[in-house]
Length: 289
Image 1 (cartoon, helix red, strand yellow):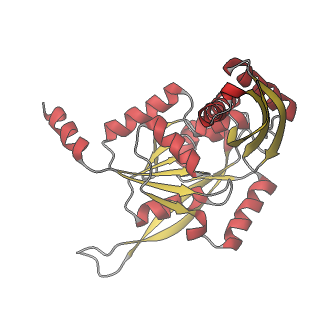
Image 2 (spheres, one colour):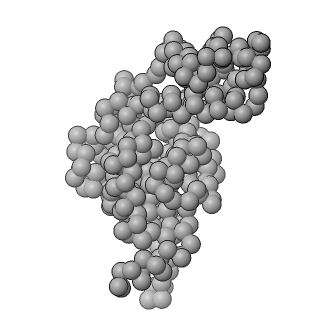
């Protein structure tokens, strides 16, 4: 009965969800604890892990994955069991504030959807908390050495992932002045530098031929009255943009059909490959009777 009442009360407490967005390797995880401290955020969701304070509460790190494609899937909680584990932990902890870290707002949306938490009401961009030089240096270090930061102490990482550890780094942050303290106290924070299993050599890309075949398959499944004429692929940092030209019958030439095709192509390719499709641009170049 007591648990039921507590759960009921917790259900009515507003949940504060924050998002931290920035390119891969730009220093998001390094600064996560500073943001959590500033906004009094209790939990951090980063690269497949649920972190409280400086402890791993649930999840599996994407940095443990062997391939980049599986690391992406792990980071966005595509695996049902993984998502359920973290979701149950959040509810068990009766969370009230969470910082979700991602490379884009789309990634934040996917994570929040799979973990059944509201979309962030406040999104912080890495550019808002780091200088241009700091971001460039962080990205350069990532590309050159393949080093990543996990916002938790080395001993916590070592429990689960001893083979990816490089070393720990330490820094201090100010703790608010309390009733019994005349001066601000310094709090020691430890972060762990790791080299993921997938590394730079494990970078996964997909050929234009493979993408064309998948796009063609999606269109054929949707309708035989639509023919694929051309696909242009633009490779971005961590995703792809597709530019598609179609021939459609007169009856199929409407906005709803185009939106359906865009959605199907995007969802199918992302589901089958784990590679993010930034957008699907469709142009009708031929209309048949």
